[in-house]
Image (cartoon, rainbow, N blue to C red; front, side):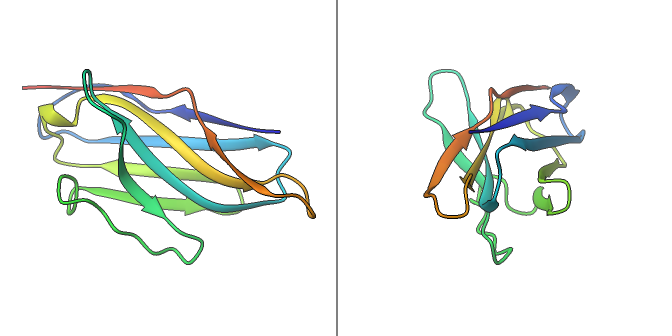
Length: 121
């Protein structure tokens, strides 16, 4: 079993920046993929920053040019740098990772508890 813990959320004015962190711990053999999602009130959770094992990204238009995902392989940590924040970026941001916990086991999706990001106008 593995765990993901997010941090770095908070309150910021429009145009400001935040840097979110997500650290994986527990039984980890290999992290195949990490990504960031967010969920605004009344909306479904959406993918905002994927990062494949090949470090390929495909940002949605809503965040492209403003958000940057990066991964520290040595620390089993993924970051989300958010610049030029807008009120519509407000929501709970969740870390997601595809983790193989054992050498001969399968890979599974893991989710963090989320961190609140609030952008005021």
